[in-house]
Amino acid sequence: MTREQLFTNIQRKRSFLCVGLDTDLKKVPACIMEKAQKDTAFAPIFEFNRAIIDATAPYCVAYKPNLAFYEAFGVKGWVAFERTVQYIRAHYPDQFIIADAKRGDIGNTSALYARTFFETVDVDAVTVAPYMGEDSVTPFLGYAGKWVILLALTSNKGSHDFQLTEDTAGERLFERVLRRSQTWAGADSLMYVVGATQGAAFADIRRIVPDHFLLVPGIGAQGGSLEEVCRHGMNAQCGLIVNSSRAIIYADATERFADVAAERAREVQQQMAAQLDAKGI
Image 1 (cartoon, one colour):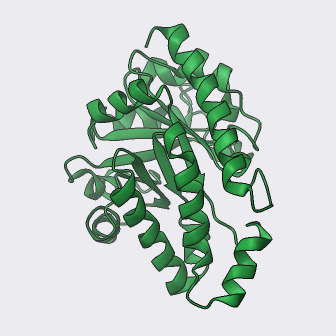
Image 2 (tube, rainbow, N blue to C red):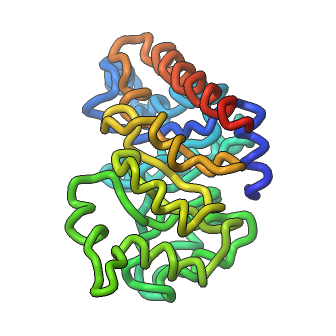
């Protein structure tokens, strides 16, 4: 998917919501697991995802399966991940699909990771850790229409351990990542992960990368403020993909889980529409 296609979807749907498919079988509604026990052909991870996708697709522009929740189940989990991507491609081809894999290794290994996600599975983007440097990232950048989403300033508490440390000139590590990585690729193939809980740091980030899209986790269950993210992080083409996972997909534990997920997604979409209107987008 190109930058222009992504922006067109944002304008058309009045949304920049990404629904995180962090599917934990310990948290899915009991009706899903009961059906899986009665029917050995029933695949609970995929069927839960399918119901969530069908319910929320009108209100979002992206889905983000987190690979840890699939790899934990071995082959069955990986099959569920692939089926989920295939289902989105077949039924909702306008959706931007992000593999939240946080890969990053020496060049030949990264090249195989890139082949896995961009050729074998065919997602639009993959999250990549930058801390092994340029040769660990550039193998992901050789695919037309595909995106690298580089970890920059994350939403977890431990982000302060390294990402906010300063060198002798006062440059923070995440700022160096932003500046250096711009020599590897431009705003048409490179995004950055910036946690919603980082607040006013978005203003500092936008001074360095004014045009790039930012993938923003941390809205909802993690307590990030959508209004603050938009105030400091939105640019002329929106420039934001804001993720919500638990607050949407686990909003209800009954047989109405998909309907309630749709309601929660619609609420966020309406808030996002107001933000886009306020910016004249």
